[in-house]
Amino acid sequence: MSLPREDAAALSARWTEGVLLKRDVFSTVERGRFRTDAGEVDAVLRRLDQVPWWSFIPARHLFARERRALALANDLRVGPQLLWAGRQALVRGFIDGVALHLAKPFGDAAYFRSAKQALRKLHRAGICHNDLAKEQNWLRGSDGRAYLTDFQLAVCFKTRTRLFRIAAYEDLRHLLKHKRSYAPEALTPIERKILARKSLVASVWLKTGKKVYRAITRGLFNFTDREGGGPERFRQMERNAADEAAHQRLPARPQQLRADTEVICERQRATLAREEVARRDEGPPRHLVEPTQHRIDFTGIGAKATALDGGKHVALQ
Image 1 (cartoon, rainbow, N blue to C red):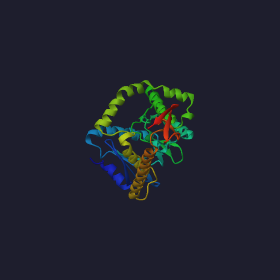
Image 2 (cartoon, helix red, strand yellow):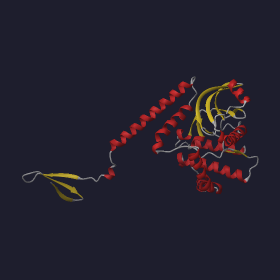
Image 3 (cartoon, rainbow, N blue to C red):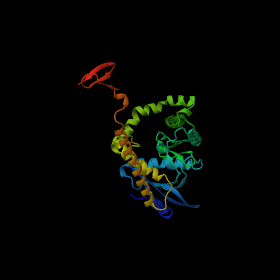
Image 4 (cartoon, one colour):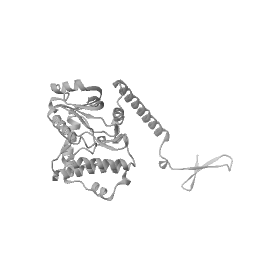
C-alpha cells in the first residue's frame, strides 16, 4: 500500500526523514523536520501506508479522529500543533519534553496544576481525550508545564451532552490518578472524592470491554500499551531508553540519535547490574536472622563454649 499521490507529493517536498519512533498495526510514526512558511521545524509524522490491509479500516478511523481533534485544538497550546494533514498522513509539531513515566514529577504540584488547566481548555473546546490513563500520553515540557499527545481516541463534541460530561469526568479522574501517584499530598478533598467514584460507563468498561480489548491487543495484535516488570523489565528498559532519546532535541544526523539511544541503553544495563550485585552482597534481611550471642567459659581443663539462646545456656560440643 502506498500513500495517495497528493500526500506523497507534499511530503517529498516538505518532509525530511529523521528516525522511526513507532510502528504498529494502526500507523507508522516518524520524527524529522517539516518545512513550513516560517522555516523548518522539528515535527512528527503519522502515516498509514505501512499498516496491514486487515487493520486499515480501524486505522483510518483513528487517524480521522486525531486529525479532527488536533485541528480543533490547534490554538490551545496544550498539545502538538497540526502542521499539515492529508488523506493518509499528517504532520504535527514536536513537543520538547519527556513522557510522564520518564519525567516522574514527584511532589511537583505546579505540573499537575498546569495539567488541570490544559484539560480544562481541551474540554471547553469540546474535546475529550479518552486515553489519559496512559502516562506516555502526558508530557512534561522543558518549561515544566503539562502537554497532551496521541489524540487517536479523542472525540469532539458540538454540545455538552451527557456523554461529553461522562468522558470529561473520566479524563479528569485519570489525571487525578497520576497526581495521586506523584503528588498525593496536593490532592484536595473534592479530588479524592472524584478518585473514589468511577462513572457507570467506566465500571462497565472495566468489567467487560477492557478484557476484550486486552485479549485483542495482546493476543491478536501481539502488543501492549506498557509492560511492567518481570521478564519484560530489561526489554522495556531498552524501549524506554529509545523513547527518552527520541524526546531530546533532534540532532543534525539520524545516526547521532541512534548512538544516543545506545548510550542510554548501556547506562541502564550498568545500573541494573549494579542493583543485582548490591542485592547479592546484602545477604538475607536482618529480621530473618535470629541474633545469637556467644560466650567462652575457660573454667576447667578445656575451653567450653556456651551459647545464650533465649536466656538458656546450651553447651556447644
